[in-house]
Image 1 (tube, helix red, strand yellow):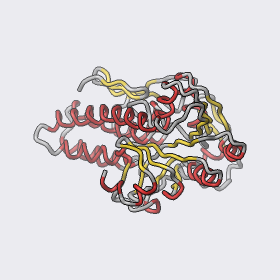
Image 2: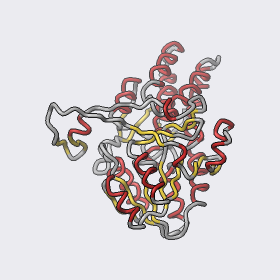
Image 3: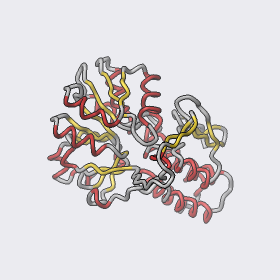
Image 4: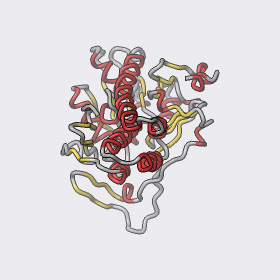
Length: 340
């Protein structure tokens, strides 16, 4: 398989490497990934994250295992196991379905390698397309609020929602970005801030519960967020806290856009109620940990509710920015997502 390089994932000289996002922004450590157990552990610990990137990483791993002379039966088992590694993010499932089709072919080793390479390269193109479409929505001087991390760290390309922001900055639109810290693992404060720093995009980091006061003060013009799964009716799951922003945006009459590739669509999922929501470890809410160490502030026996995602109803969305175009409420109500 040929060498491939993204911001936080690379395949070089027959070795798959993952940038440990848990240690960012203060340490940049690349970890080898040799097995399904390795990938599952990396996904669970959010060392690799972002719906598109998880699917790409899992695909590259399967192709790598094929090159290591794993049997067809072993590869089929690996694909099935990886498909279950992140229940909310549908990109992973779509990627594993493609790999399942490839492993069924006569020349399955080469078919798997070709499929993984195509998934990687397709994501770069999808990101560029989303960025170009989304940039049409950004006006000069816009103050944009975003949540979690949706940039190059989460994809093979420039990103989804953050890709739109980067494209607007490249176009010299003099934007400013409000970055939600994103509890409980601070993907905004650690990762989005890290990317915006690198791109030299003006930004200000805020706590998640400050967004309402910003909107009330007229300091937010638009909101762009990503998605881990979009249902057929336009409801979508994203990092927990997104629904809060959508409700606040509706109240303050602020445009609210979700940016995602068509690989995030799940037309077999009728609405948001059918999207499975992953529950994460209580320790993430009881305290904090990372490259800086760890600290616990809650009592040991504190009961914790820690969903990784929430679901935003379609009625709160101004528009869906996909790699195929920008879709309005009217478009989505007419069933356009089912036809993509």
